[in-house]
Length: 341
Image (cartoon, rainbow, N blue to C red; front, side, top):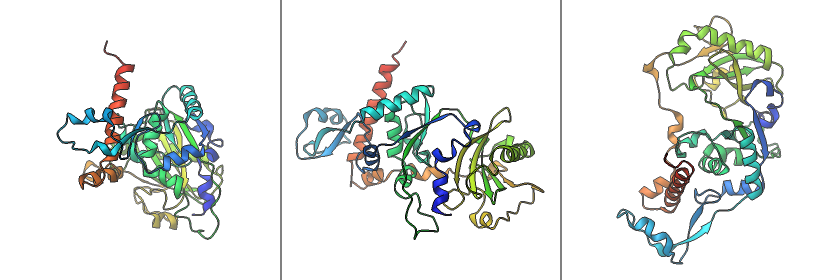
């Protein structure tokens, strides 16, 4: 995998090519001060929220909120009240884009979405209605941090200079997708060699019953809309097959270890000779065949932040307090927006 291949898989590169076959999206340049904020290893408090920082100034108005709970024994002389940074122009631009996409969006950066951070959202979803929703997910995601700091980590041409990246916030119109309808497709030398169930940790009966129809629909989509149209001959693309049988393009990824190979191994994919005895012709098609083989989701490993580990060891309670205050603030805002009838 070359650095050039990673560059070609940026959303803003492939989206214009396949715009007719994917979900409507808007791409916004990410200001440097926003990038700095996302990379700041400080609190989880998002822009527009109060933030607690370590100091020797006594802050009376914070103390009562936690005094009611005997479990919290905090030296409030160590805290002061500050504000998270604000981005008024960027906030206005993002809100306008969200409204243009129907009021709910799925956020991502040039390559990755914060799929490892859905646990932190109140509804355990990547659905966002405001910039603060986006920030909360992004600041909690290792995938996003990887995009911002190590996008070329697994490239073979490490001796060559890194290409200059213009980071972007991608907002995609929110769509309720059934995980059992998502598939990852592997292309080598412009040939579709393998297809894997995307959510391989679960068993979906309809995949077993419709195996041939699903495989053929994906092959037809590839040959009619994708093959020979992308900038590289080796790549990975994700699709969604809806209830009407139509196939939609969801994402493109580099053909290499940075991309999860799911039910295949990269050794067999790299060789180009994927063996699948069940599939006589066409690409190898693998999926979870029974409930016996159901596995835990790989993203579960991201659900215990380092801050929580530090807290259990008595090392760092500050970030957890920030998170609890943010959660309370969001709940209060939700109650104000949706008063009881």
